[in-house]
Image (cartoon, helix red, strand yellow):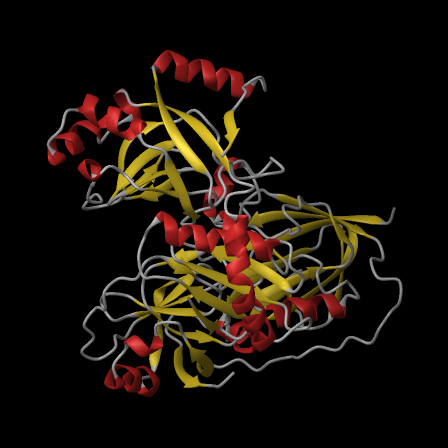
Length: 235
Length: 293
């Protein structure tokens, strides 16, 4: 672990230079520990680093560095205490999956196998970024490793589920994007009107469940009428 | 209940949005801070009007809006030297202007600076989201939520005293230029750059490209002989972070930037110099000077 100043009022805490669950667990554990700490203005947990804004009216960058250095071993006990496991329904059919056939061809498996592999694993939300509520999740089965699209789409619809490298993600709102789109969820991943605007938080777990177009429409209706119940368990 | 002042936007301007100090503390959800790019100018507008510093303002970029008023109230214009006419007569910046029904304010092009701020006395009847009135980048406008100002939009401000005591307005009135020296501290990947690359970064005069907005400014020049460093694992971005893209061009990330990025971060503009950086416009020159923490 390395702690260094970042700008004039933040610290950057970096761990091993790798994308792995173990390393990200350390990031999230420290993030969760610092959430309740006074004198911290914001945090940005990422794959293997944590950016922490320091309120220098309360303590100096140096004092905060010493505090963080002394806390990290205890921090690991906090792992995933507040994290949830979500089941996210995804329709992998037709217009919802514009890249499914091409990317299956490219990686040399059938579209059905791709869906089976995508729904087989439990994924970790490593971090949120890009746009509000975009969760970077991994790690994909190595057979699903996919290149980004040569030229990004100007507009990817909200709910689109994509692959890039060994990561999978869901576009929370309509946005430009270069991920390979293999399906769409009817869930609202980001909604500014909600108290909790993003469905997923760093450190959460996600499983995908394949649904038909009919079930997609039913879930949409349930969401719109406010009777949809999320499939969730404490991880 | 005080008087109501209603603003009707006959022209939206190039990019006009409601801003305040922004929302800090939601970056872990991918939500950028937002907020006025020149906070000093925003605060000045509010102080002239005896508003709290954190009252929202309109941030107007390069070419401002045309606004017709109904009701009565007080407004104040600060920041960039934008040609402003109230009922076709030039008006001064950093002064309280009284407006009433039928008055028309036209904010035209800028002489110096990039962003002017229009403060309005009283309580703004606009939506607050996560503790801020700041508009966010375009994707939120598709949800009909806190977009930048469009033609035909209306804005309502209750002309009530938000501050009980009057205090003498104290603020900085800056002088704008088209070239600046901006202070930076070293970034997390500073040591990954060679001595020659670092020297070039600090010796070169960079100019702001056309690709410059509230998310970030791409600079025109490249670092001499830059060979792309191996891309980093995505990590946090804060306002003022300077990344070097694979082509060797620096990008300075600002208030609406995404919260994470993967290009090496060579340096970070210090907080105090971010306001003036936000007043730079395409074509302006900038030189970076290393400061120590």
